[in-house]
Image (tube, rainbow, N blue to C red; front, side):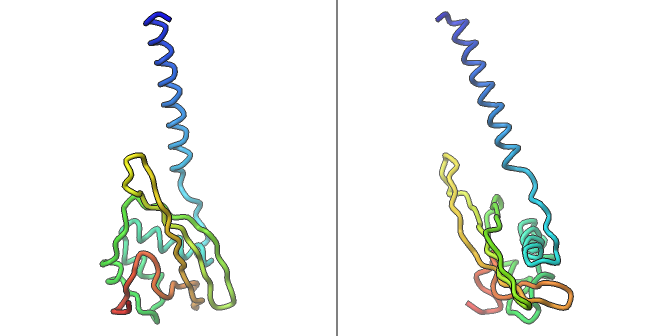
Length: 146
């Protein structure tokens, strides 16, 4: 094969790989479907969206005021800025709910590896909707409770 033909084949292969990478990137980065905030899943989604955006004041509005966690506890929480969150499952009773989520973090692997942590977020039914109780991700300490 001549150098000209080899270069042409190489160019076609590289272009095809770039197109596939672009398609995968667009497919993986599509925005999440907005859930109804009057549901436990929607309340958790709104809370987590505010947390990831760094809007702790808004995130704090989703916390049960009868619980130990406050906005100042979010100020101390740590999470990677490229975290990906997925809904795993949920269950609901008349006055409480449980939403299980997966938190995907980069492993720091130069080849793009990641790991997922599973977390449970508990909610209580309030007059104006669902509120998050307990110690939700990304907090591991609230109001001195360890």
